[in-house]
Length: 348
Image 1: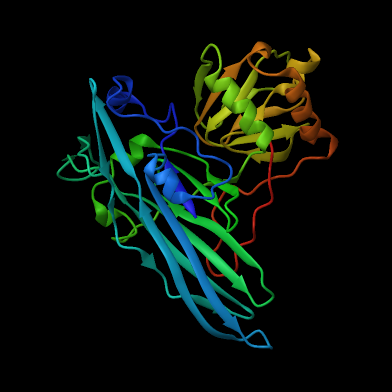
Image 2 (image 1 turned 90 degrees about the horizontal axis):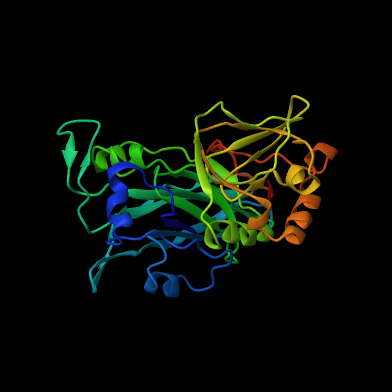
């Protein structure tokens, strides 16, 4: 299942005005465990949900005997407030798109696109005639689910709209994957539904593994407790920090993907929710890795007084990639012709 929601600091330019005035609102970060989607929908916690489930029957030799789709998209809502008044508008769902399942030797893959648009108008410029629209753009995600004869199930986020954030949960409701980039400008320039999967286009999703529970706790403290941190925007190719230089700041990656290099070798790629830079802050020394923006990124900068140092020390013990304990996470879509491998968890 994917849930699409609007994180803070994700909107730029004129589009921020309704959020700044309190007419519209950003969404609180979703939980790492989702047991009741309907409760989240009633609480106006997400814009759209895409739920893909399926069943398959295999013979003793692994032959696929029967299969079927279940599940489907769920629309969220948008709440607007003006003065003391408020109103909630349900989203407008697009019809679910379900590809013909791909059958292989001992496996079958299902692919589903779900999403829609908000009921409220959104004045915006578009990239093609008529160059202006009042109707909001379409939000979507495309999920794949591969069922194996031995009982395994693997999943991936193979496509998604450029906005908002898309989080992917497994069958047990655990957060496992995230879209790596939110691009408000590209999303609002969407000419029409014809430039979405319901027309003739999909956008490959830049996907990263979910961060650890400890990172989520520290992220909340950085963004919600005390003074709001400084937020910086970096272009792709820009170094955030360089190995061997002094540093006394901690960074929370809000959007985009950072490459982690030690002695010139790439040892990891991390995405939104990752916390980096803790070693030099804790040890009062030098940066132990070079961090480079692989895409456009947004990072929150915080000092040592913004977090619990004991929790930060625990996080640092788990990181130490330069000592061979790190793993590199995938950040791009997988080929659709072979079963998608379940991504391993990556910490920052």
